[in-house]
Amino acid sequence: MNESRLHALDDRRSLQIGVDGFADRRTRTVATHDEIGMDMQGDFTVEVADGSNNAVAVFDEILERGAAQDLQPVDTDGVLEQHGFQIDLIDANMNLLNKLEHDTKVMYDNGFAEKLDLDKLGVQIANLQTEKTNALNQIANGYLGLKLLMGMPIKDSLVLTDTLNDEQVKAGVLEASNFNYEQRKEFQYADLGIKLKEFDVRRYKMAKIPTLSLNGYYNKNAQRNKFDVFGKGDWFDISAFTLNLNIPIFSGFTNNARIAKAKLSLQQSINQQEALKINIDNEIQTATNNFNSAIASLDYQKKNMTLAESVYQQTKKKFEAGTGSQTEINQAQTDMKTAQTNYINSLYNAIIARVDFMKATGKL
Image (cartoon, rainbow, N blue to C red):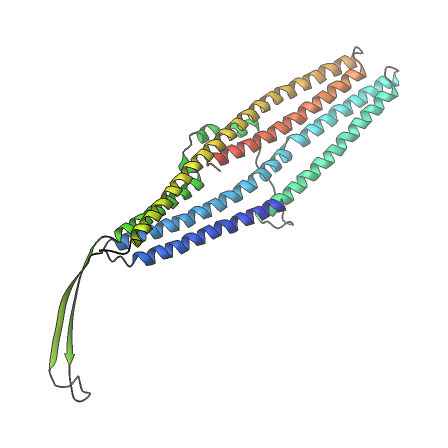
């Protein structure tokens, strides 16, 4: 858990460096563009500044989503163990074994069972009690880990009110299947990068455009032999209008080289965006396959758990009627416990697969 926080801090530093880089680039772009001297400069500068501000906003959103993704597995793990299934199944198994132990003791007192059968049941009950203690300890540690990730004081109390079932795991998947690349913040950031590179190409091209400027001024001057300019005397008017035409003729191919470099950088960004699309498609397909497999396994394990419980109940009735052996009921008990454990594991795997799927489709 500490390692994951360190990774999150490293990601935050690297993202902050990227934001600072965009801020520096934005400053350079605006400063350079002021030299062009055209009326459209103001709008162009605003566009670049807005693009950089949007990039900063996207970075903040990525950081927030990264924190949410870090919290999600811990939170679902706490919901899984708190409301469920592990503690409830252990308690149910202990009740069954206690009932079986009572019935076996009655049969032993009447000479229909052996002392060894009672001892075996005592061992199983003790094992379940140990398992329950360990599960409760894991729940307590899970709460501590969740508080740590949330930045919540350890001494404060935390109560999870969510419930968990199979339908909740499957909910929202169809909506998430309607994916578009703009839902991924990484793609939005790459798109903003392309727009900034396009601005680079535009500003270098615009430097070749002739500029025409019109200036005018009007002054009144007074000249005196003494410092009494506000006294009586003549004032002289001075006015002028200037028309300045700047036509770039030859700049030593510097501007052409800058345009070519900006175009190459733009093409690199476009190629990186296409590579990002392929990577996103791979993530979505992988997450979809894993989620479908996890849901199928969850449904199968749920049916298997129900069947194992039914087999145990039938075996127990045969044992109570004297037509079944202790070995059969022990085996049925083992099979039922294995099926319950497999169901819990498949439910947890389905939750993790759902989180990965929602992350891949930009819904988390």
